[in-house]
Image (cartoon, rainbow, N blue to C red; front, side):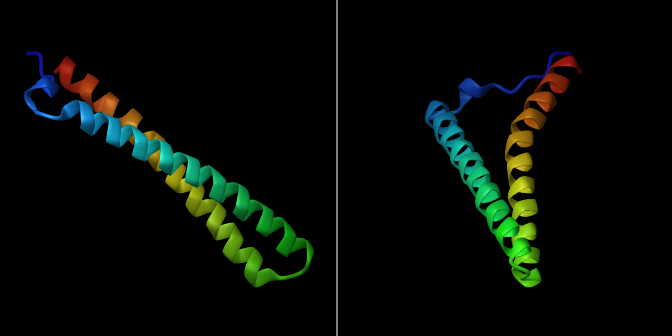
Length: 88
């Protein structure tokens, strides 16, 4: 039994793929920029002896890293699920 989604049955699927691809690109770019900004603020606040700002910047690094992992991993996970469905 070959199970695979029929992407051609929906009208406008090409535009949807373009929009989702653009959104994932924007999310990944913003996440990487936030990692850089938060890491710089974390380093500056740690060296200047401000533990409250350092803790918030560290949380910002981890949240941005998690967002980047979820955005990038979501595509991989969906492709894996489609391939599992095809092998059932």
